[in-house]
Structures are given as C-alpha cells and as structure tokens.
Amino acid sequence: MLGLGAATRIYVATGATDMRLGFNGLYALAAGQLRQDPQSGHLFLFANKRRDRMKILFFDGSSLWVCARRMEQGRLHWPASEDGRAQLTREEFVLLIGDIDVALTTIDDAVLRVGELSIPIVKLMKLHLLAGGYIQADEMHVGVQTPEKIGKNHRAYFWQYSAPGKGVVFDFEMTRGKQVAKEFFKAMAVFSTPMDTSPMKKISAHEI
Image 1 (tube, rainbow, N blue to C red):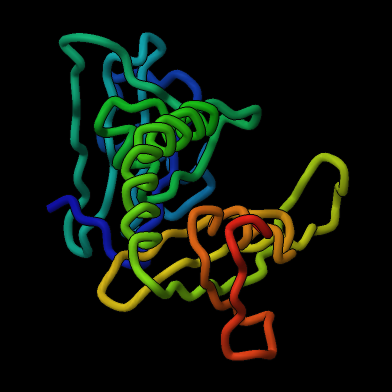
Image 2 (cartoon, rainbow, N blue to C red):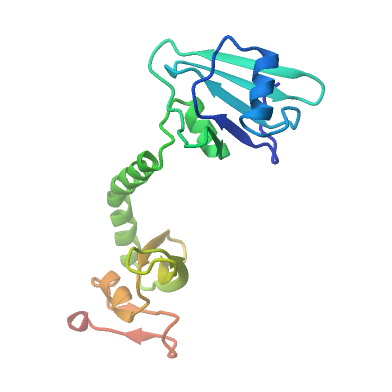
C-alpha cells in the first residue's frame, strides 16, 4: 500500500522515461539514474516525454510495487533539473499528484493571492481589536534575506496585536520602531508595548 511515513523521501527522474518499463527497468533507473536503493522504502517517480503518464516505484518491506497513472486531460507539472533527478518535499508531492504546478513562482503567486483575499478579513479583525479599550503589542525578530544584503540576514519583525477575548492580528515590518505601533493604533487613544518601561502610555489622537 502506498504511504508516506515520516522518513519517506520522494525522488523524481526529471527526464523522459519509457513507460513500457516494468519492475526491472524502473528498478535499474532508481539505482542508476537516481542513485538510490530501490528497496529503501522511498518513492521513485517517472514520467514520459508528453507528461501524460507516470509510474511510481516503491518497496513496502516485502513486495515491490509499481503504480501507473494515465492523464485523460491535461499534463503533469513535472519538475526539471540539469542532472536528470530531483527530490520533492511531501508538500510538493501532494501538489504534483493534485495536478498543481510545483514551480516556486506559482506557489509564490498563490501565497500572494491568498494574502490579497485576506486583506478585508484582517481589516475587520483590526477594527474589532480597536473597538476595545486595551491592546497588547509585541514583536519578535526574524532573519530575512534581501537583494541589498546578499549572504547576510537583515533583522525584521513580526508584530502581534491582541486583546483578551479577541482575535490576534500579525504584521510584518522591517523595524521595531514605535512608529509601527503608532501607525496601527491611529484610531486608538491608549496602547501598551513591551518597549515602554512604563506600564501604560497614553497617546492622544492628535499625537498619532
């Protein structure tokens, strides 16, 4: 039975494979082209040139399995590589089987699109927080890469805004300056941040 254990890896022959190959032929490709032990329990994926057929070779501990798939519509979004082999994450494998392009650009576009769709929800959550009389603002630094600083991490910050009994809103900023919280709290007169030594700081609307 095909399964993905915690230690299971997914290896792909990125070139074109003759789909007439059976157990012995795919076994030889897994050992030769992919440079892996066919009886390791990992998954080995192969596809034809047209990317409308694929086979999976794996060993379940006692038997060797070959699973075949034929696309009646569309094509497989098969990964590419210069050396003819690649390794997929479990998430990428699920996307491949689900006929979703595993290219990072496509994933990035999808993430950005989800972010755009979430903007109205975040605005409502922000208004819900601002409707209360108290909000806690905390920040946590994270390392990020930018084109201006190749090879080194910039320090950026995840800001968290929360209140008892309400939701939590996260914001990403490149600074931990107080102006970040002030911008968020435009519509609010009172707020507290972990950067202040005083337990509570009051800011009037005209100061923000």
